[in-house]
Image (cartoon, rainbow, N blue to C red; front, side):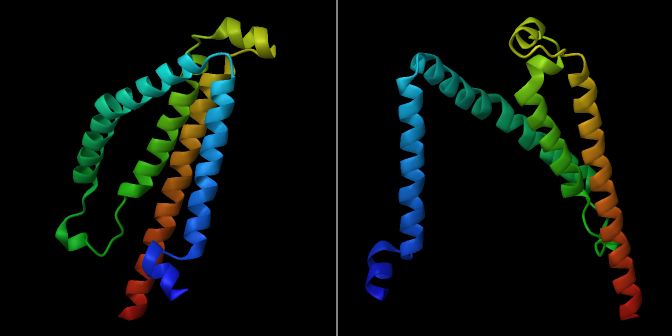
Length: 158
């Protein structure tokens, strides 16, 4: 085992996981390439990489810095847990859901959705807003519980 770890750098479980990952990725690629539109997939994939690296990454990095500076606690309140992740997580999840379903949420694909599923697209905007509100509400409750626990532990230490 020591010889394997010294040659490979990790344990055998890591090697097995890496081989399984490559096998799954190869299978997915072959399924896509076997389909009718591998060129469309390649164009979509390259566009997604470029759009992410050129637009999305700088946008959410700058937004993260702005929110981080806004939510930074003053030094006197540093014992209080930071609210940054309690805002960041629901915002990122909401943005992710919007990116995945924005054509349906904004009504750009009404005819296609109705034709393929028979469902109306009107409730998608309402449901996305409700989901976003619920995620922020749950996050606020979790932050309040975290603050309450911090207050109790400070009182117990005194």
